[in-house]
Image 1 (cartoon, helix red, strand yellow):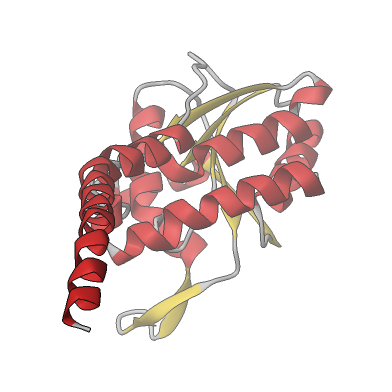
Image 2 (cartoon, rainbow, N blue to C red):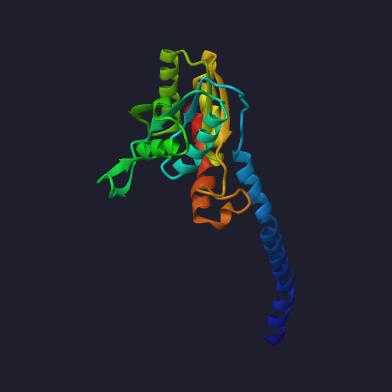
Length: 217
């Protein structure tokens, strides 16, 4: 029995060693793979001048999107900002004595950064998806003679947002540009997203949404 046990142990050692080597390789390569996953989601589309900046709603990342939109407005990239409404409300505001909608807090963030309130068009119909936003912006653009739009969104949402707006508005001859908000503030860096819970809530699900959008739309 002892000889049989020793023989089994002898044959199991190489298998165990191979498993450890594979595990070590996975741990070594994972940060590079994860970085590549995140970077693949981030795209941009240059557009030097637009008729309007389209600031996509996003309650969890409104500050970074508003900040980038205000920068572009200040740089003269567009004379107006179009803001969508996702219908979500934030926490209780003691000063205003109410739960502000995120389009309201986003507007406040824009004005705090130097954008005049009368230069912001708020599209009030509630949207529940990027596709809804694109349809609403297309309707507004047609009514107001807007032919060039510069979309602003979070980095990891940019590939799906650009594809959606090109699909919905591009076929009508509208020029679509896209600028991303910087990471490391409300969304984690591409190099370290996998170390944050917020990163796992954004990056892997975004691939599922990309596949769904390609099939659905």
